[in-house]
Amino acid sequence: VPLKEVFKEKFLVGAALNADQTNGQQPAELALVKREFNTIVAENCMKMESLQPEQGVFDFKDADNFVRFGEENGMFIVGHTLVWHSQAPDWLFVDEAGNDVSRDTLVARMRNHIHTVVSRYKGRVHAWDVVNEAIGDQETLRRSKWQQIIGDDYIQLAFQFANEADPDAELYYNDYSMLNPHRRESGIQVIQSLKEKGIRIDGIGMQAHYGLDYLDLNEFEESVVKFAEQDVKVMLTELDITVLPFPTKEMSAEISQNYELKATLNPYNETLPDSVGTKLAIAYQGLFEVLLKHQDKIGRVTFWGVNDGQSWRNNWPVKGRKDYPLLFDRDNAPKKAFQSVVSLV
Ligand code: XIL
Image (cartoon, rainbow, N blue to C red; front, side, top):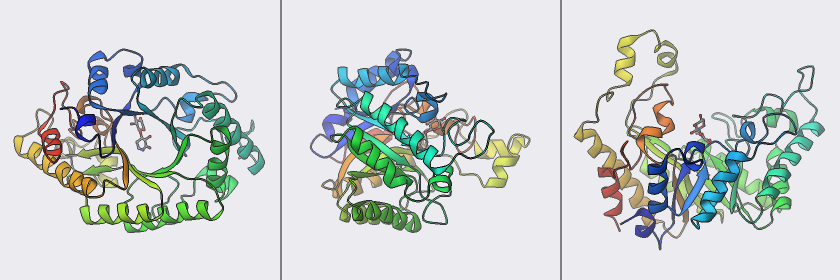
């Protein structure tokens, strides 16, 4: 039974799609997506560097194909993402001399980008990750160029502009490691500061890039409950669970020259041992038990990718490893983790 049927009465289930897929180069993956999922998000093609690589020059080709695929298949379509410090085009924060632009200029650029993109897909893209990863690992807000040039209120401006452009689209805040207590608190503050000013925010996305050694289910549950108390939809927006060890910063720097280190950090370069597949299945099962327990609070669960072969985790946090973080293997076959999750319902 496909995932979307299994969880039909609970929450939407989806995947992030890349342009190769929606442009038709990966028909097997697309068939899987049609069969299993009822919601999609754009993995890269709606990021600002993709949509507006040069100032005022928009490229909607991949995004149009993505949206068309979702419409043809009656899916809930999520746009990702309007305002982010990463995958932003080179011109965005600077003037011709290469100096930081003024606050007014950056606000105008933000407004133009959001209005152009959101208006184009008005009534077709059902929800937007308006702001992505605004929280700092130490401080409440990350000191990104957005924050430095505009100030903390860049978040509220982004939500206002998105609301102007499509008052019917759902508007989300999205960030990683939301089970970390400091980051959870900061997430709550982001939601509250918008609500206090009367600015609409409909949901919070917990990215959910987890690992066999990085998934504390108690902290996770605490975050789901606390976010739901803020009266927003809670979503898992970028779910994957790596089976590979997380390197320290020093290891990452050294890995290209150090063969032994590379082997240690890439232990399943040939195949995945059954024992590790079982561990992954147990991790997914534990996570979905919490999700089902709180199904009244969870709006959507989206995997970051379709199958293990094309998951970004093969290249993050270390480039060129072989990872197995999703429910479908490199041949698009359901894994033990798939069975462990569907067996709960
Ligand atoms: C990742 C994509 O999966 C990669 O293909 C790309 O090279 C980098 O970005 N948090 C996010 C996503 O919000 O947009 C990121 O996606 C993963 C981390």
